[in-house]
Image (cartoon, rainbow, N blue to C red; front, side, top):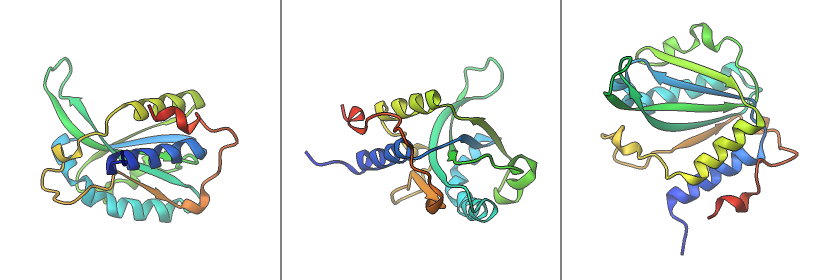
Length: 171
């Protein structure tokens, strides 16, 4: 049986996670989830700005979705798209208004240093899950959605020890 487009995308993304060093994870999401349908347009300029501001850092950017709780204790959850960004170094100054002119409306950013254990858990979760149905957020998009991108590819650093054996994911 041949590999579907979604399976191929997932395999290639996991291979990038597995083969190269990643130090930080950043998550960027709209303060108001209803604006996340604009993410595909807003991320074009954002990626250009990332490339220019941090030319010595490699980035693995992935569009994901999740259900966000609206209000404390609320059962009302809204589907929202966001960017998950793995980087090879800490992005000094990203929290200091860098994002404000790059997005149509207010966005929030969270980041954390990535341990090897956290990277392994992320890898395993992605390997086991079905890809998010991004068409539920990007309803007006008619063509395929490019789920991930790699920036500053020449700055990638090969891992000495892969997170897992690549064959372990194909089950």
